[in-house]
Length: 146
Ligand code: THU
View 1: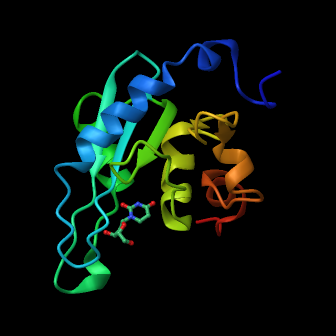
View 2 (view 1 turned 45 degrees about the vertical axis):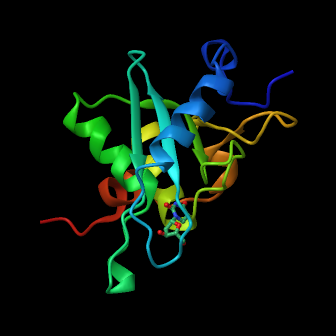
């Protein structure tokens, strides 16, 4: 049985192909400082494949994670919602998205976004990877009335 939140659509995802696309994106990473070349590949709800790679900076804190590039590519190519994601370090093995990127992915994939956890484990959902998250609902419900 797939974990809760992984829909029938999502379990038909070709994770091997998605992982390979992440590996290919990782080849284009600009990571002269950490030398960790990261690639991310995602499937949008209309079937579009979007990818991103990390882009570092001499001012370390300005580094862009691969998932940031992927989300930008999603928006620039028409928007929509991510349904599946694989992040690798170019070695065919999934890399866990960092905390900041989990928040970013929640916004653009929703809590049911399926995240590659490798060939020997079922995908995890972002809801599972970022429990109790802050989201847009907090803004609409709790901001100060004008
Ligand atoms: N990195 C990503 O691209 N995504 C993550 O989710 C984790 C970390 C990158 C940022 C930096 O260029 C390198 O990996 C080392 O932290």
